[in-house]
Image (cartoon, rainbow, N blue to C red; front, side, top):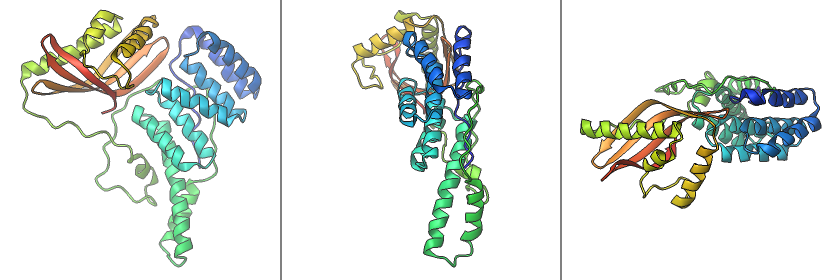
Length: 327
């Protein structure tokens, strides 16, 4: 099974380029102890740096420290759930171990964060080819005389060859491409394996349009844009005023704990840029739903993801009551 290489590149800050390049070069040269030592020195002062943690995970994986690599990538998915690369790298490791269900779940998680991530699409297709090969083999064991299964099995075995995961040192920054519409009738796996695999990841259905008050819609849209502007300018007062006192954090913790965590993250960034694409707001009485793609850049990290906000009309305007990735 030909798997795309472990993804190494996130958008990086120029100031740290030499550190990243050195760790990547040491890893390529097989000097894993030196690569890990350099990565740990860097992370001792910048423990949340996503790019260096990603490089460390790759070095651990190539050094045969598979358990450590899995731990590194899992923690990255928890700290940066919008990044597809850690999910993709977990999928590659699981595929190498022939844990195909885990690999499939990891690649699908990568695609939920970034529908246009071609690496995860290809890897998912390879996993589905391997799963298909296993299923066809079992079918022949049960019904050896089934002539229709043999050519399908042959094709799947050709597609699901030995794993050849390669490490690359560069990859494009997160780019957004509109998800391709799923075919009305999925092609059979034996004839079109790639579409069959990628069609498992579908965009959420659009919210059906409802009769709305145009004035209310514009007000709700303005509230969302004001929230973005306050976040980008690190205007904490404006940022927190965009949320309702009844706002429910996705982490499940208290509102005060969420606010303290957000304050720390925003104040800790030297510069923040947030841009929305495809903003769609649907108003239903005193409730509104806003869906859009959010491009976030800060301190060398770039994250692009779908996002959904739920808003409520209150005495002082539209306020965010809930936010979620996806939708």
